[in-house]
Image (cartoon, rainbow, N blue to C red; front, top):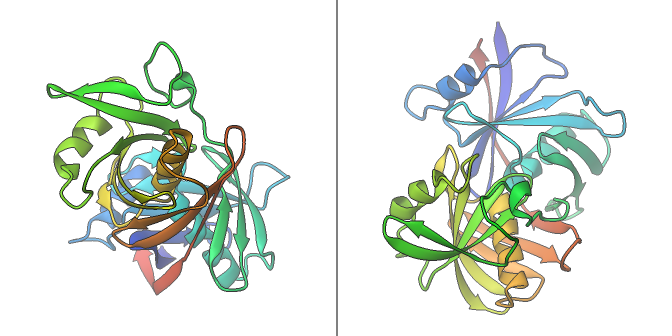
Length: 276
């Protein structure tokens, strides 16, 4: 059978989006791996599936697969693309949408200027909730990586993140340290590794090595986690402007127990079909 899909991106973090409400198919991890190959497939960072909700209090269910076939809990840039997709495809007429994900319920708001704000919910910083192996909760933790002692923050935004402050994000060893941090034994479900350079109280630069995808042009949950780490450690003040390789995200966070609000663009690239 042929499946319709839409190629989209949020700040260069790119997605293949499939509507499984008007189309019916059983998508497996092997399909994500096959279609995600940039040489022989469609090519993407993540595959997004739009499904009917299990929970009657939400509008949609949203599933995310990395290009290596692994399913993940959350994706902030994908959430913005999800919101643009369901509105463009007339799957809803709402501009405020509640969506069920593996990492919890999120709320999406499509603004008149075309930007999309996502209520990502409060960050989780208790080690067991991330999950991260540590005796006690702290704002930062020493992490030994190949003989180096790094000082990282650990935050969950529905998926696990580490955040490392660096002097210069352009020369930071993202491709050397990223995979080592991703697979560090203290992160039992692996982790997304963020590298942040603070410019001033409300402006920073960020690169993210994503679990199962490698470095991407932008990572929405990574930007949220980096903002939470920077604000909680007193480096920055909300709202935070984060420049990623693909563009800028705005992050607001009022402090412990409060939701993180991420605002940025979502763009449709092209429509296509694949054979299942």
